[in-house]
Amino acid sequence: MKLFSYWRSTTSFRVRIALNLKGFDYEIVPVDLVAGAQRAPEYAAINPGCAVPTLMLDDGTCLTQSLAIIDYLEALRPAPALLPAEPLARARTLAVAHQVALDIHPVNNLRVIGRLRQMGHEQGEIIDWMHHWMHEGFTACQQMIRADTPFCFGDTPDLADICLTAQMYNARRWGLELAPFARIVEIEQACLALPAFAAAHPDSQPDAR
Amino acid sequence: MKLFSYWRSTTSFRVRIALNLKGFDYEIVPVDLVAGAQRAPEYAAINPGCAVPTLMLDDGTCLTQSLAIIDYLEALRPAPALLPAEPLARARTLAVAHQVALDIHPVNNLRVIGRLRQMGHEQGEIIDWMHHWMHEGFTACQQMIRADTPFCFGDTPDLADICLTAQMYNARRWGLELAPFARIVEIEQACLALPAFAAAHPDSQPDAR
Image (cartoon, rainbow over all chains, first blue to last red; front, side, top):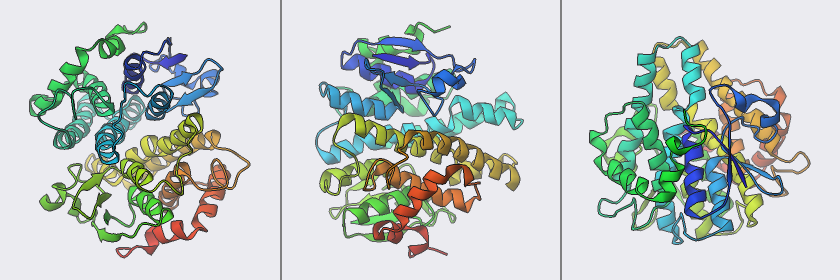
């Protein structure tokens, strides 16, 4: 397998964690989002959304969208499970993952920031924008997770932990005030102490600068 | 079951379609997003993200996030299936659904528009913003779906059809130029011809104005 990935992309970070937790062998192919490599015709041909990540299987089949890729990995190698089997528990984990993946990340990603800059917004306004959505989303997440477990919902990390830990990288990078989010920081630290998360971290990537 | 829903919310529209396709009995409880009802303390207590939809089960359990709710409904009543069983086909359907649910809708929803207005943007700029993300996302989706089937991937509607049809309501509302998206319009029309989709349409809701 090849993972087309950008070191700082939190959606790439999510898939790297899932691949590592499940013990897949894969090769990282860096896509330089800042240089616009995601818009090159040969890349757009494998990822029509012109985004990372893309997972290329050994037969050349390409999968896009981080959570769809993780769903595929879960089917391919069910252990360790990233979602509980019980439907209600599964819906709760998915809701936290989606609170990050639908309500925080898409409004805060590189293409949206680029658009705001084009519309004349200065760095201070961009920072306010980033903080606003992360603060709102993390506030919701913290009410949706358990308070008494090492990870969001138990003794092992699941998809909610993956999405939160990846988003926390962005929160730190943009200087979000983390004091209100002690529970999320605690989960992030528990996750990053695991080799699968540490090896997936942006700073451990071949294209890290 | 009770579905806390807003007529024009495309995430509520998605869940209404899924409930109807699977034949669940449910009661609509309108939440007036324009009046800010989603931020009332009693609503925030059941949906920490202060958003619609929320599905309240008969025992009072509340589920949030439209795609997590649909995943739960799929587990509860597997037929008709909204996702294929085969992992690769499932990943392809999910990728289209997520192209809409992660890359279009979150950047175009009411809270983001409200924020842009607060930042001083006029209606014309807001319309450009809406069109930009819908055009980009639909362009990707159209390359990701089949060209030769009644629905996105076959003879019956799946999660990709649900997300696209709901998003098309917003596209029409904001006057997106639809000529480049003939295949998506064709799918939307096939979907809206089905009673489950028609009954879920914003204009059929008790809170429609």
